[in-house]
Image (cartoon, rainbow, N blue to C red):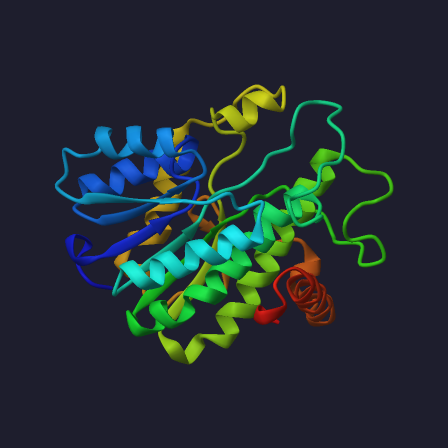
Length: 278
């Protein structure tokens, strides 16, 4: 990888929690950070707070619960920037409040599957040409140790819904995509890895769920920053990490038939919502 002051790194979900902390760390290391968020005022505040450099912040507005906005986000990145060294898919929706009801995205997709998995999948696919042109490059997916197998007979959890279950399935889908894409890009000098940064970090997402924080934000940020920047990981791809240690994901992530079914489901949804992308 190039020296950090020469890198352009995109962070989704950069206005709060882990993403916000990482954006600050990267700017202080001299990186050009493409900071994504869904609230213009919060993006403007982030840019003002991080204007001290030595890196710089470029802001990007999109609601990842709407695949049309994900498409426009990708178009904007491809138009405005001539390189992308790292894509950090960090944005996500947590468990929700205790007892919360099933929610749908703007496209009629179960919300956690839509934001935590599908948006990152589509954004990454759209930005692959820029990542490959910038190689060596990295894709880092912020997943979770909380994973649950996907029921392909009821993938949107129309029956027996629980926010925790939806979250865990979406996070496993992220890891499954990580493994698939790493195999696909092995010869392209673009590495793809996923991690569980820390357990129940002190974030608004965790507090909303009613759980007491277990880890600090700094612990999760350190593990993620390593995966984004560490030179000794230049050739490491297709791995799942628990903090800084390589770990084993849920067994479904290693099931090629299950991963093929996830790809098929993903293609069906994208083909319905964004026919030109199918």
